[in-house]
Image (cartoon, rainbow, N blue to C red; front, side):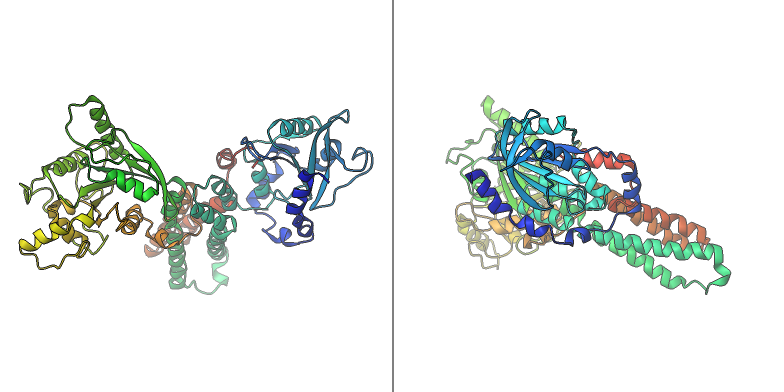
Length: 573
C-alpha cells in the first residue's frame, strides 16, 4: 500500500470505532425552536469546500455535507480494487476510511485519495458528510473540488458548515461562536477558553438562566388568567429568584474582559529617556535579541515590536526611541513616532533608571506623555505638582494611585493606564544608601523595601508616583522583578486571574451586549415589584430578559444576527 495511504489509515483508524458511539446523537439537544424555524427555510443544497485553507501542506481536505453527499461521492470516488463506485453499487459505511482514486467524468484519475464517510446524524453538521483527502499543493484539491461541483454540489459560503451544525441542533449558538474563536486563537489560553465554550459551558449557563426566566413567566402569565384559582403569590420568594438571576448574569458578564484580552490582546509601549534600559527590557521579556542594545544614547530610533504572551494574553511590546530634544532629523522622527505609539497603546510602561534616579528629563517626558503639570522635585521638583494626592504606597507591584481617569489629560484622548518601572535595580544600592543618609529608617537591599519606597529613594515625587497604577522594580540584566512586572500588567489590564492560569469560557462582545440587556430587564423587574406596579409590567421586562438570553443561546435569534456571526467564519468551516 502506498505510504500516503498507510500513514492516514494509521492516524484515522479510530474513526471506525467512533461510528458505533451513540455519544454523537446525545451531544446536544434535538434543537431549539429558533433553530428549527431557521432550518425550515434553510438552504438544502449539498455544499462543498476545501477545509484545509490556502497554506501549502502535505494533505488537502475537501468536505461535502448534505443529502446528496454520498451520491456525489459515488460519482467522484473509485475505491481501490473495483470499477466505478456507483456502477458497483458501493455504499460507504459511516465512520469508515476508504482508499482509492478521485476520477473525472470520463474516469481519468485526478488524484490518489482517502475518503472518510460520516453519515447523519453522527457528523459535524448532523447531515451526511464526506471528506476526501488529497495530496497537498493546491492543484489536486482544486481539481477534486471542481469535480464535486460538476457532480451537483455547491460551493459552501463562509461558516456554512457550522451554520448547518447550529440549525440542525448539533451546536447551540454560543458553541458555534466558540468554533470561530478556536480557529482564531493566538495563544494556548485563548484556545483553552474557546474549547471550554465549545464544550457547552457558556451555553449551559445561559440555558439554565433562560429556563428560570421562562418558569417565572409561566407562573406570572398563569396568575394573569387564573389568579383567583391559585394560592397567593409569594413576592419575597419571587424577589429572591430574580436577584439570584441577576447575580448569575453579573458573574457571567465578568468573563467578558478576560475574553476580550484573550482574543484581541494588548499593545504595551515602553517610554523613557535614552539608555534607561527599554530595549534591554524588551529583549528580557521576549527572550530574544529583537532590539539592539548599546551604551550609546539614542541607539533605538524607530519603534521595535516584539510579541510575547503573559498569562495567555497576546501582547505586542513597543520599544520606542528615547524621548529627548535632538538636532538629528532621524531621531526627531523617531521621537514623534514614540509619542504617537504611547498615546495609542493600551498600557504605557514609563521606564526610569533606578541607578541615576528621576531627572528633569524624566519630568519632561512625564508631562509630555501623560499631559500632567510641571514636574520638579527633589532635584528641583515642586512638591505641589499634579493633583496634590500623596496616594498610597502598596507593597511590591500593588496599586499606588489612580490610573486613567484619575486626573485630567490635556490631550483629546484619555491617557493610557500606566506603570512606573524602576529599571536597573541591581545597580541602585548606592541610591538606597543615599536615601538612608537623608534619614530614611528603611533597610534597603538591592530590591528591599516597597516599590514606592524605592521610587522615593530614586527621587520620584510622591505626586508623580500616584499617577501610576503601580510601581515595579526590575533588572533587565538579571531578570529580577520581571514576574512582578508581568503580574502588574495583567492586574492593570483587568484580568489578574489569568496570571495563575485561571482560564475558562468567556463571553464575547455580542454575547455581553445581549447579557447586559437581560440584566437591565431584570433590574426593571425588581423596580416594578418594589414600586408595586401591576403584574403585567413584571412580565414585560421578564419577557425581554428571556429574549435577550435567547439571543446568546440561539433560541431567539434573527436571520440578520446569524448572517453577521457566520459571515466572519472562513470558507470550509
